Length: 354
Image 1 (cartoon, helix red, strand yellow):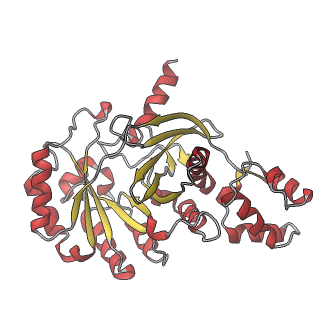
Image 2 (image 1 turned 30 degrees about the vertical axis):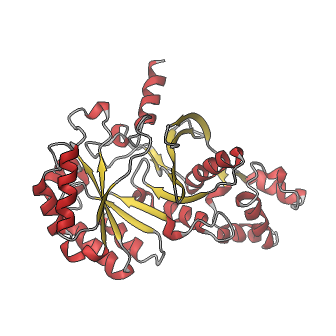
Image 3 (image 1 turned 120 degrees about the vertical axis):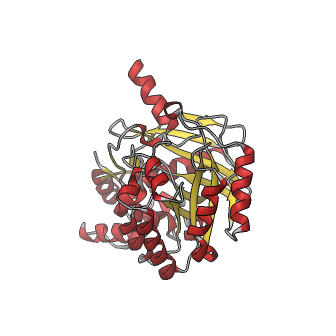
């Protein structure tokens, strides 16, 4: 299978053209056709000579994703299920906000992090996505918006879909450079957020990248015993190591970091945990933001339930009293398969039954 040309940065594409005996300006032409005009085959690039088009066709494809399912919520959220060239399935979500269109992308087929409450880990990691497959998700959603004819664009990206982005680091970074490029999709770095479950080595490496992309950390518990019981990654990267890496990130970038905290009824949603969380973040509260997330139940994880409204309110108020900036996340797509990985898991089970 040929690689998607979406996976190449403008610098890599320029170098490729030069190595193949072509002028460097050809890369800028192709870039314009791909991301401004958004063509879906090389033959549509009318200012390219036939030799260049043939060269591109011999070495690349444009899109490698095929839409198999599209679920639309009453609130405007759309969840796409895409099939890749090898038959693997991935999820991508379009969420509509007053400030623009945000897309949640997937970086791996399956997930090995093994969070006990998450639908993404129900099916273990099969492989990493290429940079082209990650960019391809954005392009599929953008083409959906183009077809509506309302002159809308993807304005924000969250890398929070299936998989651990930092376990696919090089492809993640290529993806970020492609979508951020000012001559292409021009999605601002500050409008992009990457979420990690806590790979401390990569948090430090990401801090050294000198980019303005936002970082979010899936924390979900304020102490090692509780976090290890629901997130096995805590065995490798306990909270002490994680906080050291976060301190390095904050000192290096001086950028605010978001802590994601899914509230699980009777597990991590007591005032005692809120007080521990407030203490854990106290010395970095000026650059910390806590995103409290109501749980989307998953059939296979029936032991977990959504926290009661009173518990959510008490948790929120406890953090606020301790000077921690926080919010209870507005929910999207609750009338469809809202949990990350849920649609993919259901479709695979359905296909296996059939």
